[in-house]
Amino acid sequence: MKGANLNAICLESTHNTRILAEKKTDIILHLLAHYEINNVASNYDIDYVKYISDLKGEKSSSLHEALKEIDDENLVYLSFMPAFFNSIDSLFKGLEYLSAPNEVMMNGFAKTEAQCLQLLQNVYGNNNLGGLVEFSEIAKFEYEQFFSSYWESRRKEYLREINEFKKLWESNENDIVLAFLRTQGLPAITVYLSEGMRKNGRGMRTNDSSVCTIAKMPVNDNEVFVSYYIAVHELLHQVIDGVTQSILKIDAQQRSLNPDDEGYNIHEQIENSVILAQHLLMVKTVKNRTKEYYALVSEIAGMNISNEFEFMTHFKVDDRIRTRLECIVIKE
Image 1 (cartoon, rainbow, N blue to C red):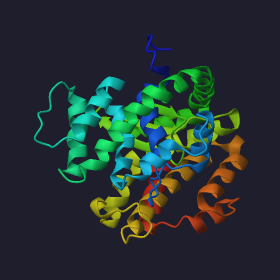
Image 2: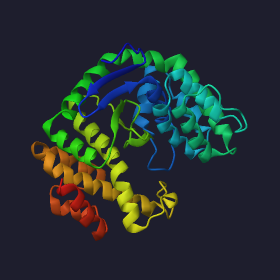
Image 3: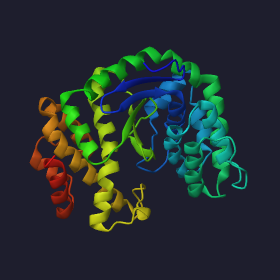
Image 4: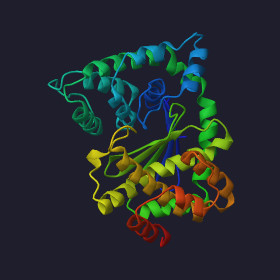
């Protein structure tokens, strides 16, 4: 374990990667797991909401009720925020700054923190800051009154599951995946495992030399492969999205994560390309986990998929992309 950071668990791993659980990432995802929106990036999980409210001894979730008063789908972008910040204190300071008018001077932030705030300001501008103000206040109250101590009570379980994840991450099979990512120019990697990451995952570049991915903390050994798949999937987005956009001449600014929007079709094309690229990798690396892999793919597809033909039939991509991905992945 790295250092003596009481607010994080960090294990160094192979190929210049770190596997990490930390409070400042988890508190944001914990709140977003209580926040319901019509968006595929939604992290809302009614079972998790009930679990937490039961722990607090509440008949209904006070946190969910408080967050229901906020109408701001852009809050999903806060999922990425903690990766840029050095401490829980600087994160809360960043939330307070972000929810203030843009004319306020940006003082006391590290370079990556300031860059993150600028990106988020581009999302918000000076509009709809009320939701951010409320979210910031709720986050700080929840952290102090419940979440910090809850996270501490879970530390031993987190460490055990991170170690199980680390074994898979350092397997010969994943060595092939990581070697591929290296050939595609992916820099140092941080894998965040978070109990609060309830649906899908997240991936982003924090700077030119570092990329990170967020996946759900497995609650038992059976979930380790699921967390692993999600982590790799989000890393592949950093490589494959550019290929898809270039071939199809997609304007990423027109992409929508709302299934009711016209731009959702762009999201599906980008997503299917990554799923195909991962499939081409997994065919080479999960020979001992074929049944487990297809069970996971079936869950993603919402239908039974048990072989190559059924996979290709459901996850359709443009022939030009398929040819390009086969060239990139298989030749490695």
